[in-house]
Length: 365
Image 1 (spheres, rainbow, N blue to C red):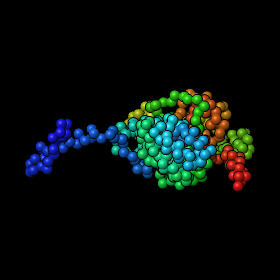
Image 2 (image 1 turned 60 degrees about the vertical axis):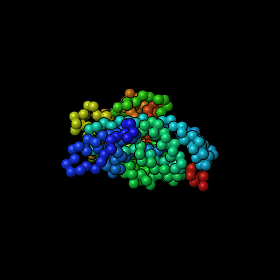
Image 3 (image 1 turned 180 degrees about the vertical axis):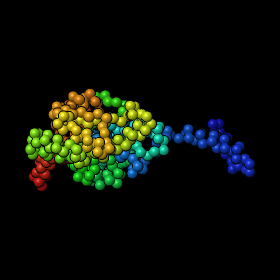
């Protein structure tokens, strides 16, 4: 027998069960120690909170995108193959994904057998040959991303429902609009203008209200009739819940995971914290927003009613991993203050943008 090898485990004879068991455990321990560190088992998609992230959201691929745009797909693939052992730099969604994994670690400590955790899926229309560099990058940063969808140039949108996606983040605004049109919570993610340190132990997610958590009903009234009519409308309908917006389901999923910590007496130490950051005024239109959330059985940990003031300075204090808004000037304001912001292309505020996009498409035909 070679030194260091486990003792031979033979078939037991009658009455030998107690003698063999320790030998089997010794052998099992020996081989377990030889295998690489085990990662947690991937949950079934229907049981998890599925976050689909594009490769350009998770990693910085500016140079690669430039090559693709200027020199075409063949040169792009060649470049990726030549550099496949060089990990990508972290992109705007990277801190968010790391925070999701930190929450998963806590959940698995409290509920070892539960599949009610975040499941991260890498969604990309990259060629499969680029997958090696993506895998190398994921392993380099010790990310737990087991599910990949590489569509070789085709849109990945049709796969989102198959993965039971709760949220889709991409750097491609057109794909995000496709997902929203399919009823999938989605947003275009943007890098901040400067880096800001965010929490390593608590996931922080900030939401705008109208056309994000709620429908765009109120924004339509503002645009059509002005603020005075809006205030009157909100007062008259204070007890009538707003219809749901595209990210209501994602807030609901976050709330479900929060309650798993609350049930263990960890409300104050919960590693998930949510924020409502809205341009609404508390006195004139805030009650309807809060009563709508209550009617859904939902809440946010903090509610900030800014009455039209800029959101960037408050977001700088919150330091969320991601902030969702339907209006690009709020997204830009958040970026300037170092916040990773994501644009939700939903509601009446998108009408001019969609018209311009359609005009550009017609002009290029």
